Length: 122
Image: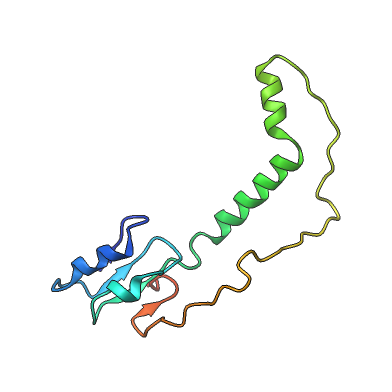
């Protein structure tokens, strides 16, 4: 088993050809280009399910920071100023999501040796 370094380009997988590695674990969710470079007989697992909670927390944190103008308050603090302003909250609000990849075709190139998700823990 080989755990890839974070953000390793897919073309580096061709270096596994002829090695004893039978299983590769990625630290990222994507698998773009893996099909083109992964040697036959080597299984590839991505990190689906690993980063979602932290990404969601970061998105909420950044949303609240922007909504409440935290950067402006921090700049004011550094300048010795109290920049008190009223800001709307998130309570009783609805989030609207607009997908920015409209028209982009999903890849149908996933093969049997590429798996979504990490290895089972026993």
